[in-house]
Image (cartoon, rainbow over the protein chains, first blue to last red):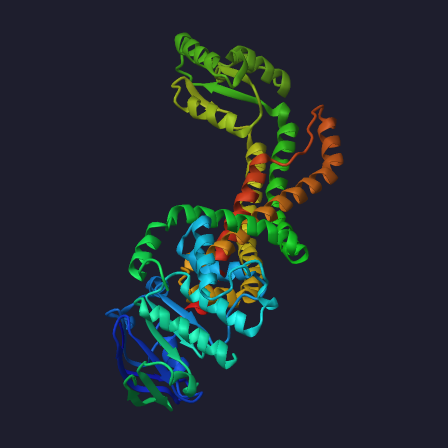
Amino acid sequence: MIEFANVSRRYANGQFGLQDINFRLPTGRMAFLTGHSGAGKSTLLRLIPALDRPTSGKVLIGGYDLNKMGRHQYPKLRRQIGVVFQDHHLLTDRLVFDNVALPLQVSGYLPGDVRRRVDAALDKVGLLGRQRARIEELSGGEQQRVNIARALVNRPRILLADEPTGNLDPDLSRDIFDRFFEFHAVGVTVLIASHDVELLKQYPVPRIALNEGRISAFEEAES
Amino acid sequence: MSGPTINEARANSEKSRRPLAAWRRHHRQCLRGAFSRLIRRPVGAWATILVLGVVLSLPALVMTLGHQVERLGAIWMSDAARMDIYLATDADEAARQTLRDWLDRQATVAEQRVIPPEEGLEALTERLHIDGLETLESNPLPWVIELTLSDARADTRLALAEGLREQSAVAEFSSGDDWIQRLEQIRAFFDELGWWLLILLGMTVVFVVGNTLRLELHERRREIALIALIGGTERYMLRPLLYDGTLSGLLGGVVASGLVGLALSVTSGPIERFAASYGAAISPQIDPALVLLLMTAGALLGWLSAQVIGRFYIGRLSTP
């Protein structure tokens, strides 16, 4: 479960990135985070894996108050959260395999298991057979799929995505959203930030609309 | 998605984690990584190691100098391996014999010669050209035992002196070892200076290694931020750095040993000639204990540097 209670994030220059955010996303549910660029979507997502701290208010993940969490507890929290970034955050000098394997190696899996899981994750995003490719040899869409495979390889409880289809064509975008929807179907809590209104309309998922750092609307799923 | 449900998959996933084996494996990877960086970035890595070598060789040279002074001093003082014991006036024949037996048992005593007061008085008369001393009512000179020691080292004397102090028949004994004590003090001074330099320059090592590691961290900052994001612990991120720092320090110690060895071989000519003039043969060589000290100090300082710099920067890269 993800819960935000009166969360604000104020920057050093005095401006608010987020202001008085309140919402709850129960375990296994999916929601979209919408809004123009600069509305605060990325700022909100960064608070969930404790990449940033709110200046006031509480963020609770699975009932744990992140404000009360020490630095040494972050790794455990972050291993349960898969994150797909706007910019790919891939290690461009490494192979596809190495990029996807990283979360498993960090969590202490042995090479045999790592190989099996990486293959499975790459299979899910349609990149099986590209393990030995270099990241720089891949197209933008393929790189984004590597990113998704890496976010999922650890079988996280929560999946966050920040503009995951930002630079992809509509077909590919739908394909990627379909996959997110599948993960939601098997019990993963999914929160996706996107401004692609047309694409979002195709999914019966509640939407949290952000505007200038505030929640401007909370739309229940249309079915 | 077909196959097992996510919860079953997660349970399986927990089962197949092998933290200890993975931990060992990561250590091996980090060690290999540290060596491979020496090959991949030869100029940067070896420049650091060379600087460490030069910095560490300075205290080592000072310590070695002290050691050589002591060795040369020992040769110089080799004819000073003697000690005179003056017996108490009330020590009778039996007390004298007890003392002689005790001296016989001391491994450090090579020879002993007893000089009775009469013989001493004769020698004194002869030496001072004074007549009439034999007319003295009683001989004021004590019994003397002249010792030849097995060697001229100060600690040999000290050990013997300690024993002598407990012998009731002994009134006094010649300290005669002023020179050896002075040499000993010079050596102690060099030793102390060496240790101070090692501490002082050790800080330099921490900064030199730290700066190299900082550059490496800067190059790998994206990777570190990513590892932090996917749940890597600080220790996991720090580990490769610890291996890099320790290896650089260790190799710096090896280079320093090499430099000291080189300095010794350059100065070996004069030292050997000096020793030969006293009929002794020494070939100056680096003390294995010093090599061990340099390598240990280098490795420890490198590790410390990685801890300090690593924790600071990784903390900044991985937390809000």
